[in-house]
Length: 353
Image 1 (tube, rainbow, N blue to C red):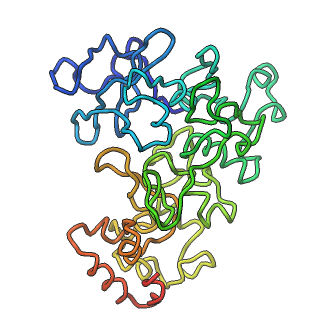
Image 2 (cartoon, one colour):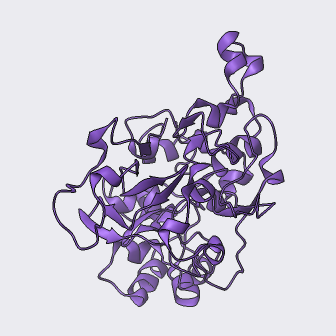
Image 3 (cartoon, rainbow, N blue to C red):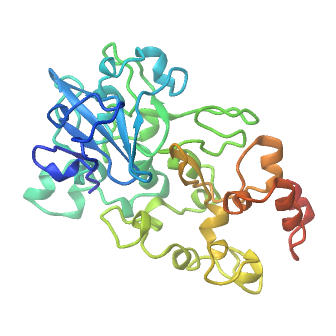
């Protein structure tokens, strides 16, 4: 269960920064905070007015331990043209709460529980509690790949409801979708992108440009096409590994991939494939196939999920960051192109793509 949303009156430790220290960006006090949102990369703060919650104007950058202003700028997310550029006129119900709660009711503005509880992924559970059986609960492991992955895509994607506005408001989550009782495609459409053009959500090659778009990336991947699902790699109930991976990243990747494997890489060793020494960052599968290029906050990025290698030539032609220069920040694009073209067993046509 992801405890993203916390009530500081119940969990006073939830507020990470010291609100007693003055900062020009912070124009609220602890008493104003009804909920905190986030604890890994950033923390935002919601206040309650009537039966709605609203985001306050400052967010805590956990990585850099500094305050940053918070206001979704006009002409960024699609919904900004339907809401004034004022946090206090942007309720979290239509824009956030559907993914950070179970059974958010758009009429009553109430939830069964805050955060991603059991029913968010397993569907209605009252009958299962009364009479536990595999027949009265949804187990994602028993679903086909598309439906199983949709459980995650319902929130880990950028898109729009098929019907919008709903009761006069524009929603940024798939209103009406419930696991086990419908198909996500009947409620939600992924954000469109035009190849060759960079947008707020996508790079010009179609790779996601911002956070919370793992689903947009993943459905483009060979992994998705071949039946891999989100929980082939992740356990949302929690693990000791980063990103709730089932195993450390390289261990996990090399269960299906390996030297001379039909799945690749087609090389005598991993080191021969990566051209980096064992134990170094450059020898990690995710360094090249899941580079950190999707913005979470300021210069803090999260990993892409297309799993494709982005060559330096794509940076040159389409301005998509490539993993070579993401790691070798002091080197030029020309250096990356030259280095890659010198690798044995690397097709010059592949480098040029």
